[in-house]
Length: 134
View (cartoon, rainbow, N blue to C red):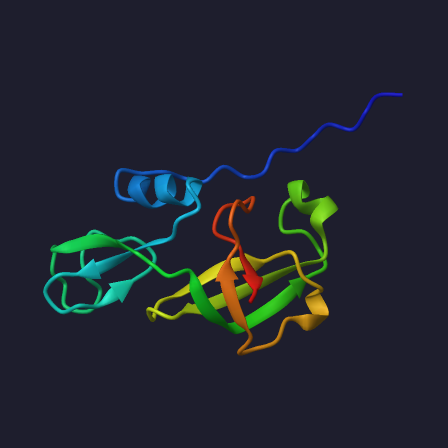
């Protein structure tokens, strides 16, 4: 009998705009953009500040701390590569710096996940930039 084929995880799309972000993520670091004109922090990466439209945005290290703003538990995998990981928690995490980001919450009992729960960036997580309860 033939072993089942391993389905790879979907590849991320790296562009000139997002390369710095993904390189930092591969090192376990979370970067956000900050506008040098108005101070607005933003996620996802953009060429301009979404608050004042300035092109003067730079990267800064985020703390990796935040709260669960909302979440769901996926019982049907969004991709065949996630079959063995189901069920899993998908959350919108509101970072202490302000921006919200879609991510996974890992290494915990999914019944312990609640709106408002504190989370921290999970070091060495696969995929990068997952969170764990803190």
